[in-house]
Length: 141
Image (tube, rainbow, N blue to C red; front, side, top):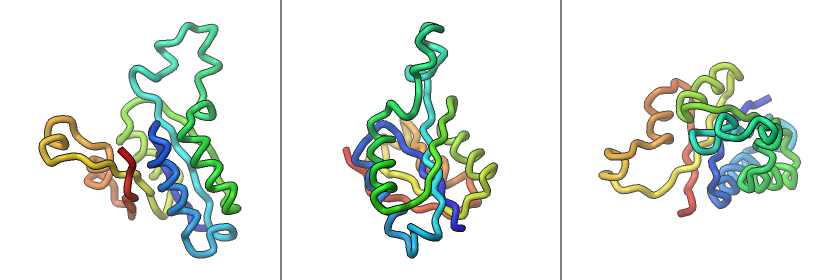
């Protein structure tokens, strides 16, 4: 099996493009095992929710995750949904190592060089700090 990590954020178009790339891999319906990863960050994490509502904080409730799932299901690609919380780039890199994936499929977004310098880029950070092969798909705005 060819194991692929697909970390998605809350952008539906980007998630759909990432999943479409995976679905387009050779023999994806037979030879690919995908791991959809959604990382809750500050502002979206369970720690900010009242205790009685934390059980509802799930990646399955995120629209971009559902779009990626639909794309993979339509293509017959086996996948598992994973969720994490914390530093996005660090979690992606660690999960890629833990799962021993063959490829990380990242969803890039259009950013100016100044924007990357000032705000950083999860995609850039992952690319610079992993020894795993990675692909960056085009991303929506």
